[in-house]
Image (cartoon, rainbow, N blue to C red; front, side, top):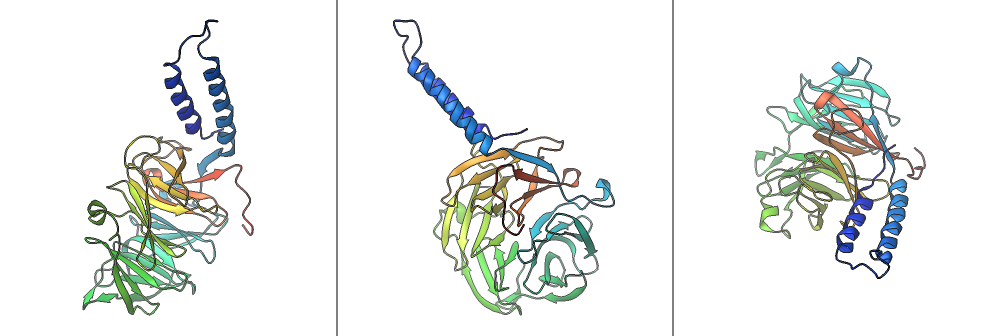
Length: 340
């Protein structure tokens, strides 16, 4: 049984600090009113904690056993089918699980693209793979893992080499470049439609961010985790900044090294912090809500996790290189998602 108790601890700690400043009444009881507040906060916090009760368990079992299981370099959920893709850069392969998290099949990318580090699937079932293609931008496979073709994305006569990429609902490709942060948008045929700078509304430190976590497109916006500065940016597909959220730091409620971000079925934003070994949840307005997980090398805990996705039924999946482990995070009192 695990629950989110950080809210309770924070409230009680704050109240206890204030209570030390109070005086003793003529009956010898230290501020009875303050004691009542503490008790009330405890019970309110306990109710909130129970509502946020969660379980972390191993997920995506592999038929050949854990020792040969795919190393989760990156996780991806196909929004059209709910299928889950595990990108294994160390072995140049991609494993696919169905929406119920059952193993389906895998295919090797070694002859076409080595060290695949990110995938995206369009409405036709074509699998776009970003990795080392030597002379091309992306490799494309069909839904059976058969190679189709390479995509050479060009801009100003030069091949674009992405730091990350994603597909929108119309199968347009968005390619991220940094230094400075810039996005190139292509149609499904690989033709450049437009290019535009992003994060111009942010401060100089944010604009100069050299390292971006897992770049992704969720709905009609781009998500950019910025590990070095401890924040996450939401940018519209038109290039306009929607919001930057997160407080840099290494303590509770703070972001130390945000590596990935996913939007939950309830509209919250879940941010995976690699160095704090947990997930922090924020509202759409960027307000911190709670955090779950923690450091540990056994099942039920995380150890430097790097990948995060939200499945169609609301389950969160977290991948880490250590022991090739993928774990699910399920909130016990979460509403049932229709169609899952």
